[in-house]
Length: 73
Image 1: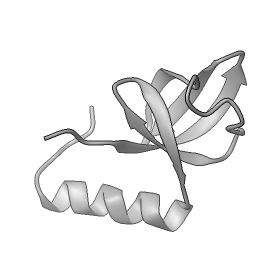
Image 2 (image 1 turned 180 degrees about the vertical axis):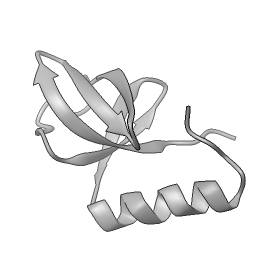
Image 3 (image 1 turned 135 degrees about the vertical axis):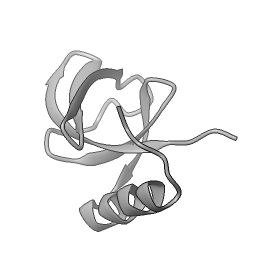
């Protein structure tokens, strides 16, 4: 099974973005979402943004992951 994790885009430079995943910072690719913008929440899979989501959906997903024992580190 594969998971996509919500993240908030903090900065964009070219086709790369720095994202925040509940305090965890990561660099991701925007190759599949070249029109992504700073401040948006996206789903991350295999190091790439694959879909926009709204902030409430991101929060709901974080809670669901925590309830199932998955920690983001």
